[in-house]
Image 1 (cartoon, rainbow, N blue to C red):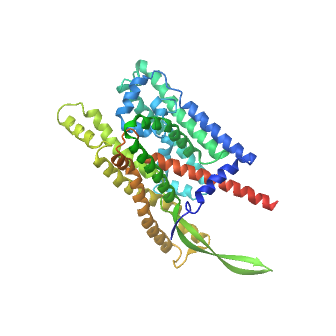
Image 2 (cartoon, rainbow, N blue to C red):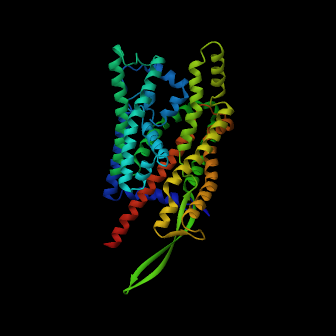
Length: 442
């Protein structure tokens, strides 16, 4: 059975929880602390690196789709080339790498089984890996800016040495600063800090998105349909994000009563989400599809055979081409299955159930339970994969239906915003319930 908690008044109850949270002093302090940290992040996003030619930078972003996609995770900081231009994307990349390496590397697999201490060590490894990823990504962007006449000479010799080192250290320090702010929110505020940093960046870009829509005054009807499509997609994302398959689980427990031991059974459910991969498959798919076309543009000016091939791919893999969106759909579906199965196997649900005396009704513990859960996760992931694939190609479908080209409806942005918003509201509701229970005990 697949259910969706978003239906039946679940979402309005989360909104009410956010309103009620301001009536409690400690929760109100957490919310204000979170908002203050996000305001500090937006302030840092407006501090640019020295020596940037803003006019050339705008021209570069208008012609480079990959930078525009990366700018999604920096909240416009990359377009301004600020000290936090890389955003938290290097940290996200490091987290994905550690997750994918955990089932492959025995040492990491052992750490994942050590509970809280093991997770703390894995988190420390993620921080260490973030630094070289940020250095590599930052240097690549600086070289790109140099080639586009946005920045002065970049290199590790001569007069370019000190400016290059200063710029690299600034962007890497900016990334680690954002990671630190995110962890402060997680520890002392409300919600997942890293996700809220991305959320704040996306929301900060909405005024510019709306201004682009008002420029297209000749297609008011199309803009109206565009807005309706956006609302329907948000409702669809909420429904699929909250939908899950309940696996009935039975627990056998022994209790003492009156000096004697009694065997007592307890039933519960193991929820398996239909969309357990979240936004990760979309990030993978768009990065892979955008990269060949972006690389081809740098060779398109060459003459001869190489130039002809580069121009062919540059024209073929553009957001207005059907092949571009077909590749996006296929890659999103493939990455959804891959990432879901990797993460699901790391959780070792069958082993944990057997250790705690639980079993799935009608299924023997151990390997049969693991095989059964794998079959279930594959079947429900098919629905989640097709859902994510559809969400990924919504911008292309919306532009065909409405003929609105001035607005770019980012499905990844909507997915992140809805997911982070629901998770934050859910945490607020949990905090309220905990405080209500404390009141009853008193």
